[in-house]
Every structure is written in structure tokens, then in C-alpha cells.
Image: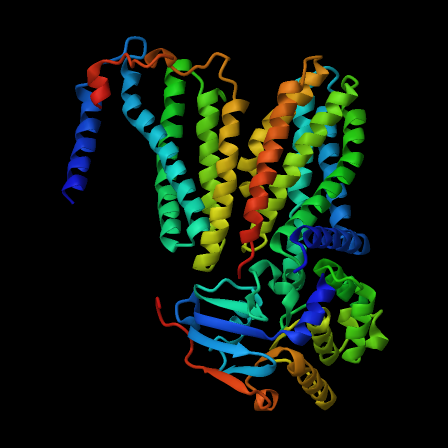
Length: 183
Length: 224
Length: 224
């Protein structure tokens, strides 16, 4: 319980700090603020998808309904974060590159994840019967799990991406102002 | 290989063992935990009010339904039949079994025989149709048959591969007196070498059973 | 016990023959699909006209037309069983994997027939340069394989739900996106004189991945 409280507090502080205390990245200026929402949301949507898919496979293997509960919950939360990531990214793109959507690799990837979430939840809503729903949703999730790696190859990494890569080097170091990182 | 199985059913005895089999369809509907062991040659009956789970139990025994809990194993001659081979050892008939309307009765059974890998498909379905008295309508479409004759076709499907175990869910439904006699003959014939399980509300159908379980209640009221 | 391999192959073959026979007797599935494909193609051609050297658009439109036609028709194989209530019969005589593989091969044949009509029409109506036949057909074949693989798996899942056409399209699409991207890219490349090896390998790998996962997952499709 205490952890939830602390987490909530941290998130609240981060959000306020995003607008007041955090420094601005040169070149991006005020739009930096969106980073605090966009990047964590994007990460969480990926983590949610992975969590959901892993539990789907576990359900198929072990046939325990708890795995399905995890999968569904992760999917619902993940969808929320994915929408936040997509929308915040799109708004940022408009502000910085003057175009809401460009199908650059990152945009395509997050959209793909959004589609998977949408399809998974739509499928779940169309099935009655707890066990049938769990089974069919898990089958779909497992199939989607197989396709996700291919998007990495399909969306070429070699062409110029509008995404601000300079912030994160191909190396290991993250050259961000420590205040940004603490957010 | 299935010829060997057929001769084996004459000598080996089939048995079904269920341990704590239960199934939940939804709140308040399902099959209460049930355990039993039946050995052939014999006839067993599953009785109980509507909604008590008779059909559910038969589906579990046939391998059509994975129960929410518990296990049901089929053994022949002492060795357990693996799940993937169960369909060759079990003949199942229930009123919700439908056939392909675009194929004739013979073609439906021929398809079944081919899929089951029977060595002599034509011989098998001809014999099955004759056994249930449908020899004359083999070329007709199932939709052209009366409901009583369709029920006979279901029996023919169950008998097609001469299984060791027959699972009959309300076998005399839609049947006239002649049909009931046919069912009785089929059961009698099967009980000599194998196991018959009849699920029914109708006492006339299961009065010949040597073993019987009565399912009680309207299923599961909550998580079991 | 009969060996698993030969009986599964027999079941797949039986299912495939049954599908072909049923489709031939009713024909409405193929008719509807062809009509849909031709209609879509006509609409595109009417609206856009000839695209002499816009190979990017040509490649995209070809695959969009094929995709739409597939999404409108490939769930038919499973929906037909559910609507005719013959799934029980199928499950009694064949394993889930055999059923699904049989229908997968049927879907492949179905798609091939569809493409046999649609692709030449497309090339004629839309203009465009002559394709490098080897590369063109290779990409077409591999893309179709992936398309059929995804559509069969999703079709089997959707047939057990309340949703139909729209849900089938929506649920299939994420799985089809990588295949679509690679196929469009490959088709465009062969028109532009570029090598298609990369896209072909990608499509082949994708098809293999989807088919492999499907083979593992089909077994769990029908448990109630």
C-alpha cells in the first residue's frame, strides 16, 4: 500500500516538475515537456504488451485462469499508455516537424502496437464464456507475439528517422541532463 | 492398424475412469464434481434432471470438452488411450450432431471414415448404414431425412469405426418404436464386447444399464 | 495404435477433399469472393485509371485489392462449419490440427483461384510495366502463403466468437501488416528493377513463423 502511495506521489511530482523545474533541451525548447509523458508511456505500452503476451502463453501452457487475468489487465493498461504515447508523439511531431504523422519507424511501431492492443481487446469483447475467451485471446496473443519481431526487420532502421536519436547514442551513454533523467 | 484395434476390442476390455471431473459454463451452470470407474463389457447410464450436466459429462468422456477440473481417462486392455487416439476408440452420438447438407448420407459417412483412417471406407459405411436401416437412402441428403432417420444416421456415425466405447446422448430422441428397438439392438450388440454409456432422462433407455450414476443439482453455483 | 503421422495426413486429405467438394457443390463462397475482388478492382481502376509508371501505387493497390478480397472470403471455411453446426462432426473424426491444416490448404487453393482471376485483370486494367515474372510470382506466392496462414488461424478463432466480417478484418490486420509491407515493397522492387531477395526472404521467414506458430496453436482451438 505504501509503495502505491509513494509511486503516486512520484508521478504527481514528476508531472508538476515537467512543467516547472525541468530544463529545456536545446532545439526542442518547450516541447521537451512532452518527453515526460511520451517516453514513459511508450515504454509502458511495450512492457504491457510483453507482459500480456507472456501471460497468454503461460495460460496456454498451464491453463490457469490467473494468467488470463494478467494478460487482460496488462492489455487494458497497455492500451491506455499506447494511446497516450501515440497522441503525445503525434502532437509533438506537429509542433516540431509540422506534420502529425509520417510513418517513420517509431511511429509505425507504436501504431502497430496500438493495432495489436485494439484487436486483442476487440476479440475479447466478442467472446462469451470465461474459459473460451481466455483460450482464444491467448491463441491470438501468442500469434501476435510471433509477428512483432518481424516489424523490427520490416521497418528499416537505416533510413533517416525524424525521431530525436541524438538524445540516445548508439552507444550506451544517455546524454541527458540529469534532471531529465530523474523525471 | 485399425484392423488390429478392431480385433483387440473383442479381446480387451475398455474402461473409463473419471476423477473429480467438473465443469463450469458460467455462474450457476455446469457439472458437479463426479468420479467413477466403469469397465466393459457393460452398459452404464448417466441420469439426472435437465441441466445437471449429462451431456457435458459425455462430451468430456468423448474428448470434445476439456473440463474445468478433474481427469477422465479411457483405457483399453489396461493401457491408457492417449487423448489424440481417443476419437478412434469412441463412438459418440448426440442430438446436436449435424451433417453436411451438401453431401449425401453416404458421402458424409465416407468423409468420416476417410478422416478416421479406416482401411475399408466403403465397406464400413455400407455396413453402418445397413445396421441402422438406412441402406436405401444412402444417396439422399441428410436434410431430406425425417428426424427419426437423422437420428439413425447419427447412430451410424457412432458405429462406423466399430469403437470399443459408445457414448450415446439421448439415443432414442425423435425415434418411433421401431427406432427404439434399433437402439436397444445396437446397445445389446455393443455390450457384448465393449462399453456403452447412455445419457438420458428416459427410463426406458437406461433400464438395461448395469451401472448408473445420477447427477444431481443444477450445476455449480459458484467457483467449485 | 495407428501411427499418428499417416492418420493425420489421411485426416488432412479427407478434410481438404470435403472442403473442395462442399465448395464445388455450393459455390457461393468462391462466387462471392470473385465478385468482390472484381468489384474492388473495377472501382480502383475506374477511379484512378491507368498508372503507367507509378510502380509504388501499383504495388500497393494490387496488394490492397488482394487483401480485401481475402479478408472478405477466407473466414468462410470456418464460418460455414459453425453456421451449419457441423463442427461437432468434424471434431469427432479429425484432430484440431488436421482440421485446421486441411482448411489452410483449402484457403491456399481458394486464394490461388482468386489471384488467377484478379491479378491478370489488375495488370491489364491498371497498365504498368511488364512484371519480372519470376520475382513477381515469387513474391505473390510467398505473400499469399503468409496471408492464408494468418487468415486461417484468425478465421478459426473468430468463428467461435460473436463477431464476423468486421472483427475478422480488424483482428487479422495486425498480423498481416508485416507481410503487407514486405509484399508491397517486393512487388514494387521487381518493377523498378531492384533485387527482391530481401523481401522474399522476409516473406518466407514470416510465413514459416506464422505457420509454425499456427501448428502449435491449432491444437487448442476447440476445447468446448
